[in-house]
Length: 324
Image 1: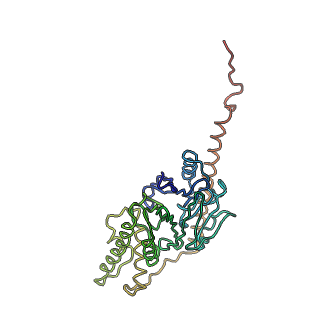
Image 2: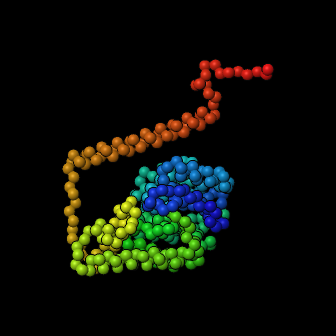
Image 3: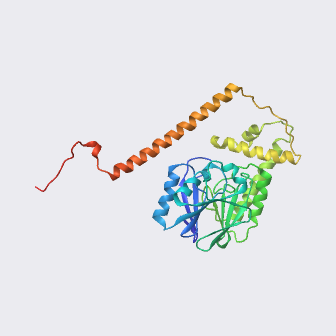
């Protein structure tokens, strides 16, 4: 999908309720292009991107930038490097969080306010926007007024927040960007009224904070989960853990400000046997997934082989034909 003269969106349908509607990989520039994010480690993301490149334009991927370390945004960095020779750009706080996902070479570190220049005279500003995650990063194409937000701002819902104070500061910074016309989120549709949308994000978080304060005003002592259940009555149950995480981010901020008091909990201690069993089960899961991926790749290669070669496994001597 063409967004602006320099920006295209490869939108991959996504049924995960944490990824509303679509997960998007953006292409920026012409010829030797930039990708912003790379999708999950699933074949459909790679096929969608390759198919778009083949069907829509004569472009290759020279650089791949990352908005943050969550797997639905960065899992194909090695593939992009192997397939296209793409150089990977990440900010320094992301490096330890991307362990195992970065290619062995071709990684360049960036800092806040650095620039990425790509073919076609396109230049993007790197904006470190912690809050959703410690390494969350936006990219701003000021000439066309396009801001790539990853999960800092989503296209049709609120987002999850790890550090609320950082998040609110990041939103304030984005509100001050000159010439802002469009926001391209990691999930959901392109946002065409970015200033109002960011203002709604700020208002929503302020309102949620006040709801938490009011709920605790009568002296009740509640867990974050109990607060979540009281405030998110109609939420999809698959989003309850995420909502609880947002409540906890509010509570951490309120505690720092001296507006709520936290009573320490007590973590459940696991026995060495439980720890060992959980480790074995996780190893078995990982190995099963690895083998499934291996079989899937073998099946794909086998299907291609069968398309390209005669059915010699079906015949000892195939029929022959001559003119009657």
